[in-house]
Length: 450
Ligand code: ASP
Ligand code: MG
Image (cartoon, rainbow, N blue to C red; front, side):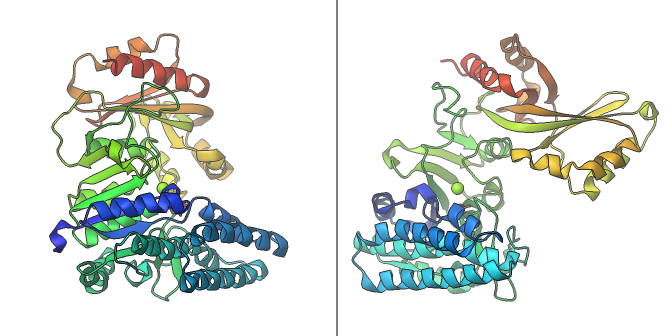
């Protein structure tokens, strides 16, 4: 096997949730010999349990209960493998985990929290290597911390791309010609040798970074849905899987709420021009979505993304009339507090901007300090309970009638703000939370009816 055919395959938590799921993944690897590097998430549910375990307020009995739950998930799989050595290794890891958790209970640190979070991937990758062997693939475990070098920003560590490339070429590439290597997503290691994590859902990103570092030819993200859909299938049963989509369009979708991929995943793939496949490990025969640089079909409408819980901040100042530098002052306040603006529209004396507000985090970020500082410059109003809808496609900014097609459909729905023109790939607007599903459903029916 020469490495110029390398596929990096990543399996998410549901794909490695239990023995049956792992077997299906092992078959996927077996059926395509270009699959040489496998990146796995923790078995479904394990990271959530570890997050709880890593918190300061968890007492000894809850710690014990959590470890038992994690142990059960892993032992349900181990029971099918009959491998004493592996069972012992997992047992040792669970003992170590209990120790670290105890230490965390006495003296909390973010550093130790990351160590705790890393156990899920450490266990699932060891177990999956064994499942591969069981189906006749020579699979070997590899500790990604040898190559995934990061800074020490625990919980949200930043990967050192140069070091990753250097180490991956040196330690990982030679192994891939001989064996299928199974390694961990999500985790890394800082210069002090401490374990770090890349942020929740970070395994997709790990896989993309490894694909880039090894100049892989394909990245396959195996999850529990048959690719990327034209919109959330929970909103309309008309939603269908997209066969191919460009990096540009897919990046917009990831940013605007399609939850399939970690939003950073496409960045390394785009840098190295690696096509990314997204499919379901439950139904690999159904195909999935191929994301690549250039695509044959470029429809005006590709998909509709919906992001809930948006906060709209409007600032207004008569001083803005014919004045310069006002926006710079507003943004200086936001930058100082590290607030990131998504959409923005301006009129002569006012500016409206949106902020992503998952589970109320914005209320905390957009705190009284920020508002007070802004109020010194202008009048400020804040609205919650809005949803952002992004119609994603091609040449949106140069196609006649896009606005008419979209907004004619939305009779009876109040559109609070519209952004169009900056991107060729989207038209975005805000609606009231309660009308969001209806808006998406109507748009999908109108724009995607064939
Ligand atoms: N296991 C980690 C999480 O649940 C990373 C991942 O699955 O992508 O966030
Ligand atoms: Mg995921």
